[in-house]
Amino acid sequence: MENNPPLKRKETVFLNLKDGEENDPEDTYAKIVRKYRQSKNVPWRRFCETPSFLKLVGKLTNEDVIDLGCGEGFYTRKLRQLTTGKVFGVDFCDNFIKMAQFQQYGANDIDYRQFDCGLPIEDIPGQFDLVTPTFLVQNALSEEDLEQMVQNIWNLCKPGGRVCGLNASPFVPVEEFKKDEKYGLSLSQKSTFYFEENASEYSVRLFDKEADMDISLRLMWYSGQFYEEAFRKAGFTNFRWVQLELFEDTDNAEYWKDFLTNCQVIMYEAIKPLNKD
View 1: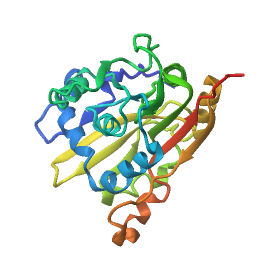
View 2 (view 1 turned 180 degrees about the horizontal axis):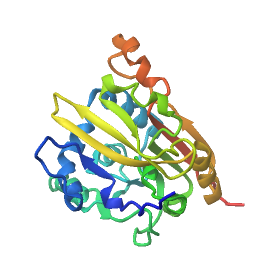
View 3 (view 1 turned 135 degrees about the vertical axis):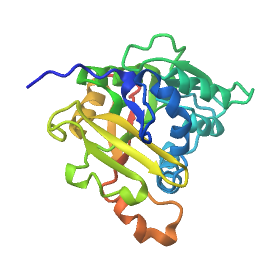
């Protein structure tokens, strides 16, 4: 089998452009920031993903929080509203960090940093009561890359602290890739080894005509077992997968049934013990 060059992390997100438009990989993040922000407000995210994740996070008071893979700060800002403690946001993309900083509108009560979470993070001061990897580890380009991300999560988490994450579900088989097209979400297979070998490439397409949004994100598939083992290897306990729920538009629960059945988005939680044996 021909060996393909490894993906560059900067090329893992791209726009689905109209005929005649060019998609320069070197500028792909700069182009996608505005569209990606719009993707956070589509119905399935408003009704299911966002309230489900905030339910998992639960009530906060003065906890210190760090949001890894923060993007333009959507969840970071919500976490800022929940706690009086310090709040950090970290993302690989400099353009996302600039937009997140801009949206503070002078408040400057969130400390945003640009880091590649696939490399050791050494310049963040202190540890945090809550670490939220929001769609982070699905971007790991190799098993070693994923394990480094989880090691960073461990290093940033206080003993006794929690991890609450959002992720593309590792449990969706190829035959269900198109089941959510009516919600503006579909998957496509990039590797014939999807669902068979870790670090198999695939992509998710997010589209909404009303928002004039059509973007795709290249992701890497890892088995649910590998995720669980990576967190256990780092030292975390009580790892569990958590399903999304419907919180709004409940009168149309039947319409959302397909979306929530083997949902393409999943959450997880883990605990860092007070003392690692």
